[in-house]
Image 1: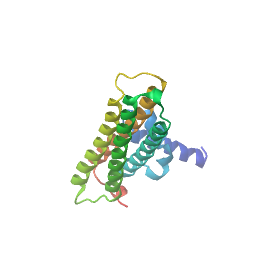
Image 2: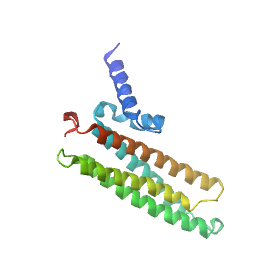
Image 3: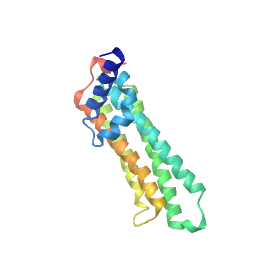
Image 4: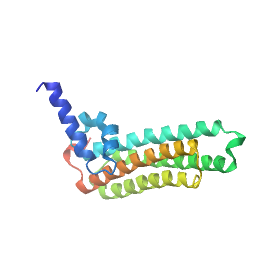
Length: 181
């Protein structure tokens, strides 16, 4: 087997191993495969990659929601307008919580690891709740636009769920030498 083929096979193995703990494995593998070479078997690097991907996904969702809000017209109605505003606010909160999560993962410390993992779990869980709360305003609503909103928000929720699973794996594994910067 050629060196580049062996490297690609190892990368595929690493991302599959990391994503084995996630609920949405195929999404995890697709979204995190670019990090395989750098993360290898490091739970902290996989958790950091997961949160980074989640931030990108959440920002994409909020940009989409803002675009919809700007294109708002009278036909959409007040209920969807309020729901969009609430959803945008929820995603703003989620992005803040995700940045706090990334900050924790960038500054892991053996002495405060347990507290850091508790905080990480809190922030990622809050971000997941924010995405779910976003959809509450669209309950009972139908139409293509609402389906698109649900699809975008659901994808962000799935990616966040995967990040939480990767963080929980890190918490259960503990810090190893490979995890330290």
